[in-house]
Image (cartoon, rainbow, N blue to C red; front, side):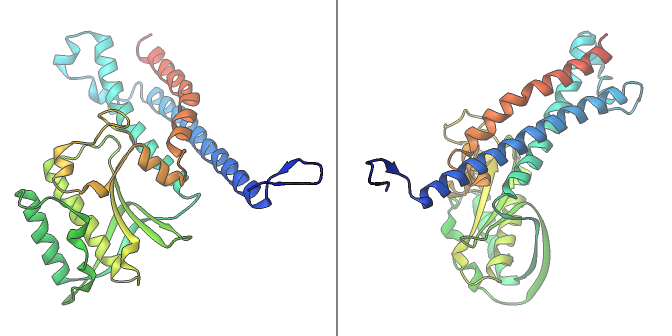
Length: 287
């Protein structure tokens, strides 16, 4: 609470001023990362495609030989190939950007390594089979007690999209990120299996088992921001509490309730660099 000095003026406590300054500094750091990532991406994207203009194995040239698309004309042929390249590379940029932002507040790793028990892997296989047959609805309660299962030891290493540790709270986050949320039936089970095994590896090592959280995350909501995530392939294997969609994901990695808005606002301010890059590529391929 502010207090009043002898002249009747309100003064903020040094603690509150410190928090506000920290918030400002965090926003500046996030904006700097977003701006830098977008500008670097735009420059690299245009340079690569322009350099590949006469390369038969170039990204665009490898995709323009679809005779059914070519029959629609050179512009459609070009835009079709470029759009696929843009979508893929933009997703990679967003993944790197999120890691850089998360590094401001978390210890970030992209692998989990350690031991788990045969009884744990057997139980994981059992509940996943029930999810597959719709005999069970996924719940975070399903794997409570997994760390108590013992037996033959298995040494294992898992590559992870994001393994974040909040050193302030000792909270561990295991995150599977799909930029747009696409997860086919064949991958849904294996993705959840990998996360559950990582969960076991961590909970076998740390004292507070409740400090490990599994999350399925997306960079945007394909149904529209704020709308429920209803993709059946995801909901078949992931519980409601395990979904970290769009705004929730960016707020988490930014460690701010305003994280999503900061990222989107700064991205929009720098999006013209990508548009300029696309214009440069077009001038080369469609003079």
